[in-house]
Image 1 (cartoon, each protein chain N blue to C red):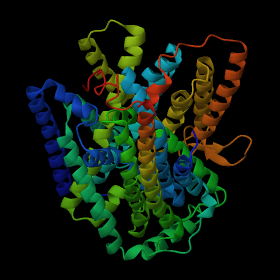
Image 2 (cartoon, rainbow over the protein chains, first blue to last red):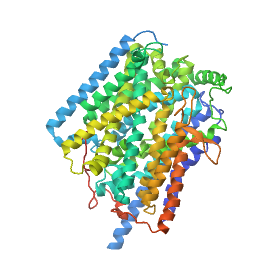
Image 3 (cartoon, rainbow over the protein chains, first blue to last red):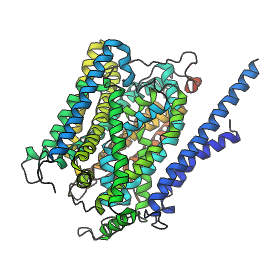
Image 4 (cartoon, rainbow over the protein chains, first blue to last red):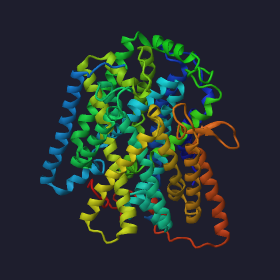
Length: 77
Length: 540
């Protein structure tokens, strides 16, 4: 069943793939950050971004599961 | 490169080694006396631990010779191309989030301990289950080989054994010592070595990481200096090829390689026998997902460790064999006693995962080959004996990889294992979501992928050897250089899909599926979900 929440979860999980596999979007030296070329700090930044995205996906999934459970219990009552 | 034995470092190294081994041994005895069953705890990854402790322990397992030696060495040698390990670990977590909770549920419902168990139950095919088991064992060997190379690098830099100009026995002495220690270690502690040893090992590793990534850049004058030096080295021309020796960012030609290596490695990681065991042992479905939200923090440290490769260049480390770059950097930078601590961290950090891997592979053999095909009525004693023997054979296999492959590019060991283990993915992950694939199609697809991958990898030459010199090759039909494992995987999927259509049209008999759709979403506490999984083999 496709719900808006699940679409958001899917997007959160797919985003790192798009960002990381599109290598030419970040294969450059400038702008550097404290001397580290863009290529390196950008990917490390994506570690943080993907962590946040996975956390969001997890929270949404929890909520989705609770809602579904409540719905099921409500229906059986 | 190195003159004589570094006595202080060697003494500290040996001290930590003995301490950890004795501790593991004693702890397992002490626990055995107290409660027989609690031995299983560490073998199955500490199910009684909370999320944070599990995170701590899991992270220690992720830090192997791959992170400490192979990845920085790849950066040291070629620059940007080696950094693919960072996107690789970023992509692992969304995959785990999506796939593994389903595997957890169905496994706990039906008592599956290995991927082979699941495949047999799902597709009713012993042949497919055998294929998955054989692949798991085969693919683990080069991964263990990588750990051996890591230990060898440390011993080499400490001056145990010799340089290139000594005779073959002395030259390979560090490797033989590493092998001997690993074999003895698995026998004495096995998976019994409980959480205690893991805490010591992980604490050592974290201290070394923290010191290395803060202290070394400061000593070298900051990242500006480091990348400046690296840039100078990489823009030099390689006399053999006429191209620059490396690059700070991948060029147009390198982007496909970079992306396919990252994706292929990510898909492969969680199909190794040892990572499946670890995942299945978590307390509930939910713990897996929750852990994927904090595990990525490790990728950040991996990235910083990878940069050590550049630091080695800036520090003027010059070694023929790239694997020695990081141990050499530590020796040059740190006072002797801390060099010993760092080497102990690398050594133990390679030994423990290698032991876990070889036991996981041995258990796979015992459960899915020995019991299923050779001796269905085996007693637990026989099982344990077979497991112990096979865990030794797996290590001998790993040794064979070390001796036949180019040790200067150790990251290739892991990538070769990945080529093979990836071929089990259609059966495993496909099976988790759909029963549409036909078992014979999956088996044929697997065979095609294995043969293509092995032949292609065999044909890759490197400057130092004719075969198995690398893991990337031109992708047929696209013309870009890509990771062989991923190409073989795509081929595998295509064959599987086409053949499934054919076999369905021919009405070929489908195997019996013993699982039902709701099994894949069951959670702890639901009816029929076993909290404890059955045990097999030596580690348990």
